[in-house]
Figure 1 (spheres, rainbow, N blue to C red):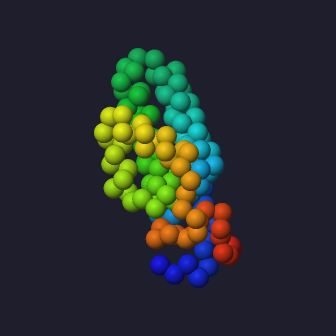
Figure 2: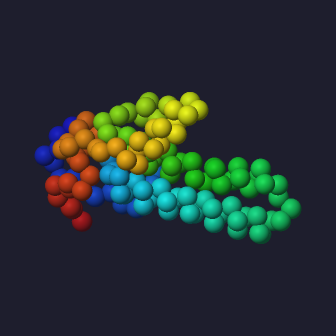
Length: 128
């Protein structure tokens, strides 16, 4: 990948749903908390609008709504640390999955460009 070409800043939707590119710790935290907040609001609003729904059904809906953005954010954060999507499979292993998530919040990303793109915040050019 040639990083000498013009790089575009990720849009809001690209940050939430695309799995390519890199994001830094602060961006990951902001978007992760946003998705978490939307999930909590969706859980309570669905429960209030449909009081006869079981908690399992409401929780399943919340998970379905938020799993895509959570995966996309984590993959981009792992890309910043020079790890692939396959590294995210460690989330499926109990205890190890928690360690990966904690590391995603605190691990410093790779300095400079890596095979997943330029360093976050180091946009070479913003095209409109």
